[in-house]
Structures are given as structure tokens and as C-alpha cells.
Image (cartoon, rainbow over all chains, first blue to last red; front, side, top):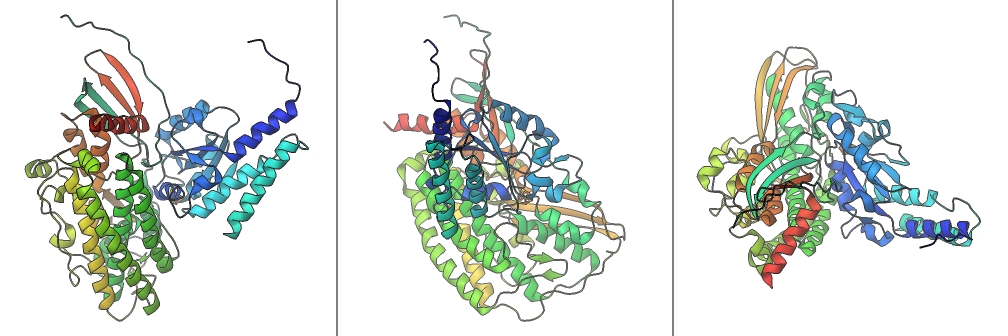
Amino acid sequence: MKPTKNRHPDRLAGLKTWARINSPWVLHFNSGSCNGCDIEILATLTPRYDLERFGIKLQGSPRHADVLLCTGAVTRQARSRLLRIYSQMHEPKFVVAIGSCALSGGVFQGCYNVLGGIEKVIPVDAYVPGCPPRPEAIIDGVVKLLSSLKAPQGGDGTAAHASEMVEKLVVEHEHR
Amino acid sequence: MEKVQTSRSFTVPIGPQHPALKEPEHFLITVDGEIVTKAVVRLGYAHRGVEKATESRNWVQNIYILERICGICSHIHATAYCLGVEKLAGVEVPPRAQAIRVLVAEMERIHSHLLWLGVAAHEAGFDTLFMYSWRDRETIMDLLESLSGNRVNYSVNLLGGVKFDVDDELARLIYDGIDFLEKRTQHYLDVVTSDAMFLQRTRGIGTMTRSQADVLGTVGPTARASNVYRDIRVEAPYGAYGDFPVKIVLDERGDLEARFVVRIKELFESYRVIREILDNLPAGELSTRMPRRIQEGETVSRVEAPRGELFYFIKSNGTDTPERIKVRTPTICNMMSVVKLAVGHQLADVPMIVVGIDPCFSCNDRMTVVDRGQGQRQGWTWEALRRYGIRHYQRLAR
Ligand code: SF4
């Protein structure tokens, strides 16, 4: 196929953002957590919290994921795994660190096998504190990240629509 | 016919996690055609060095780090530790505190067993049951939250007692919650013993005889499903289990179905014990004074976690920090049974056999499947293996 010139780069980017914000696929990786954060992430999938109403889908392959949810402090053994998963994700990719451990190492700071928070290894876009954070907080963290993705170029109708949608979702969520 | 030997080996490097099972773990499974001939497990991706860390924290700080060894059975870790330290210090804990500890431990067992029921159903491809059991689990999470203010790491224990009291209003809430859950649990028991598709995945699969269970050193519901009389709450009652005894739940069959049945029946036992504790909650203080330094000595503390016997060794040298704390969790005891039981089974049964022991240190991140016949080496994700198992049985059902 002959490459065609993209006459509306802004529109296209806006459309992509719109699509991404409306249905982000998230991947979960545990790099040494206590399971507490993980069961709360799992709880967000279940009927009471129902993450999927935001179009967010938890699935298993880094190649399909837009957002990486990280839990736990990074242990020496898990470090290379984390790096590999991160590099397997396609751009643009976003990382949410969930729980005190993922933020700073939390209670495990100073353990000989713990390197520290996620940001010691890969860049992090959003932080959700708590030990563990409530499912609502996790959903809020992901939705806040998405709203910060708003129109990168600004001004475009499509992208503006996207951020509006997200805003609406956030408001809806907060009023629940 | 001569076998063609190909030396083609390939790995499919797909992501190493699965939403339902946590913590990375690595299995190396050798198969001959469809049949597993060897299984090797590698643990330790989540090793953080907690035992060593306890040596540089004082006795009180250690409650909080030990509670975070496992988020699912956080309370029981802190309980084992506190009971041990109190024994070392020679401190008598008020009966009301002991009763509340047991109350929370049983509530934790309910949350853990319901969680497991959902995850195991999910592995079998029975997502409806997964969603239902997790919906009902929120009932007990709410109760734990109203008791302690936290959904996962409740921090109920103190050295020398507990922090939270149960008043009449909370007791009423707990009674109501338990009534609701009891009805639902009866329903789950009916489902796992009568649903034909589900029974196909569990009945006669992963059978462990009583002597095997004994030799492999299994603990908890995994052992009890093979008719091994092993429950610390019954054999060596700790805390308030002396006043509120539990009945042991046993099953003779030893297969996966038995493991489902034992865990679900244990839920009824937990409901009964919780009601009994609430009916006869001893009056009195919630905690007693503890010395800051614990006198020299060493002790062993054993409790029954949702997954089986949890073992703590605690040694004090008379200062305000412990000299050594050793923890042995139940999953490590049960893990060897997976490695043994998988042999001779279909590859499609491996996910169910693994979740059958309720692995706490799980998230079996990636399978490497080695096919001896063709000399191929293949990496599988847990998810791919789960799908493979479900499809395999769907084909059979047609
Ligand atoms: S933040 Fe708390 S709950 Fe989450 S992994 Fe760390 S210790 Fe566990």
C-alpha cells in the first residue's frame, strides 16, 4: 500500500485519544506485593465496582495493553520482568502505581531484596496511595489518568469531546 | 514408523500475568503428548526479605510488617506473631480480646474461602460463579470494614490484646450478614456438587490419597479433603478456640471436588462459631500492658490460616527487637503436592490442580511447556493455559 499523506494529523490524534480514553485496556503486574492490592484490583472487576462500565478492561497480554497497573515494591527478582513487560507494551503507554509499596516501597523499605517503588525502575504516570487503596480509589486513579490525557494538541473537536466524556465519568463516579 | 526428531524450539513470550492469580511463580511442565510427565516449580519472585527486616524493627513495628506478608490472610499472621510474643513475655491476654481475635480470624476465613471459590471457578471457565461469589464476599468485606475501618489489612491485633471492640450494633450487622451468606453458601454447595460441566473439571481430578497427603506434608483444607485429621484449631486450640471449639471438616475422596466441598463446609462452621462468639462474648478489657522489652527466650506459635497451618518461630534476646523470626506459610507445604499430582494428568487439568490448593503465593506467571515427543519448547502464559483447559473440556462436552 502506498503511504498516504495525513492531511489531518490533529484530527487523527484526537480520534486516537478519544478511542483510547473510552476503552483503555489495562494490564496488572505484581512485582512483589502482599496480595492486598491485587485482591482489591480484582474486586474492581466484580459486580459491586464493575470497572468495565468505564470501558476499562483487564486483560493478560502487555502487547494489548494501554495502561500498566503495578502493585508492590519491586523485588530484585521481579525487576527484569517488570522491565520486559514495560518494553513489550506499545506506545503510548501509561503506568499507574497502586498502593504504598508501589509508591515508595512502603512497609518493605529497607528490606534487602526490595529495590523500592515502581518509579525506581520505570516511569510512573499516576500514583494511588493506600495500603491497600480502596477499589474506588483505584478506579479514580485510572480515570484521573485518562482525564489528564485530554487533547494533547488541544482545540480539536474530537479530543475535546473525549475529555468531556471523561470529566462526565469522573463526576458520575464521585456522585455514586 | 520412525519418529521424526525436530530440533525446532520456540518460546512464545507473552505477558506473565493473569488477573485472577497473583504473584509471579514459574512452572516447568514436561508433557508427552497431552499427558504431564514432570512438573517443576520455581518460587520466590515476591520474596522481599521480611524475616530479616523484622530484626531491625521493634516488637510493635513488626506487627505491621508481618501483617503485610499476605494481604489475604493478614489477620492470622499478626495473630500468630502476637500469640507467640505474648507467650514469651508471659502476659495473659483478656478473654474478650482473644474472642475478638478468633471472631476476626473466622471472618477472614470466610472472605478468603469465598475469594478462592471465585478464582477457582474462573479457572474452570465458570465466570458466573466467580462474579456471584465475589459479590457476596463484599458482604463480609463491609463487616470487616465496619469493625476495623479497613478492607484488607485490618490491624486488629495489638501486643497484649486488640484495638477494636464489637458493640451491639455491629453484632447485629454481623448476624444479618452471616444469615445472608449462609443461604448463599448453601447455594454454592449445591452448584459445585451438581453442575455437570463443573463436575467434569473437578470430580476424580488431582486425587490425592490419604497416605500421599500425609507424606507430602500437606496442610489445611487440601489435607482435610484427603481425610487427614489436621487442623490446629482442633488439635492445639489457641486464642479462644478452647472456649469456642470448631468441628473439623473432612472428606474422603481427595479429588478437586472434595477440596471444594471441604472449603464450603468450613464456611458453615465459621458461621456457627461467629454466632456462638457473638452470643457469648466475654466482658472485660480489650488489652493489657506489655513490656517494651521481651524477656530472653524462644517459642513456637502455630495457628490455622485459611490455607492451613501457619507456623512462627520467635526468638528474643531480651531487647526491644527480636533476634530471629521464622515464618512458614501453608502454601509452601502444599506446593509440593501440585508438583506430584500434576504428573499423569492432562495438561488441561493443570490450572485446576494448581488452584485446588488455593495457592496464596501465586500468579503462576508463565508456563514453559516442554513437549518431549517433538523436542519443542514452548512458553505459555497462565491465561493461555487456562483457555486451553476450558476449550479442551468444551470439545469433550460436544
Ligand atoms: S500497599 Fe499494602 S496492601 Fe498493597 S502490596 Fe503494599 S503492603 Fe500490600
